[in-house]
Length: 75
Image (cartoon, rainbow, N blue to C red):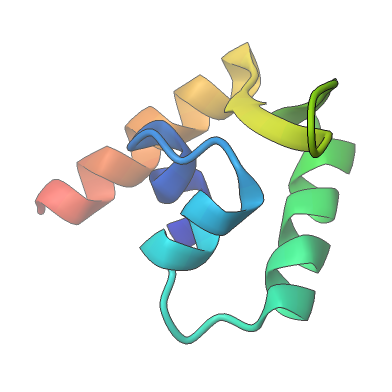
């Protein structure tokens, strides 16, 4: 849930997720993002440049899930 919340709060690159989620190891974060991508919650886009990097964004399914997470956090 924290990864989804971080994405909905503006995290797009791997290091932005790491800053938003202190205490989460890079390996665990990479696994979670991969799982969320496979579940259709986030999509990863490869961005060419120097250095090339990936950006993540919520899919429509992920946006609905993020709204539910925000509702849980508001209670």
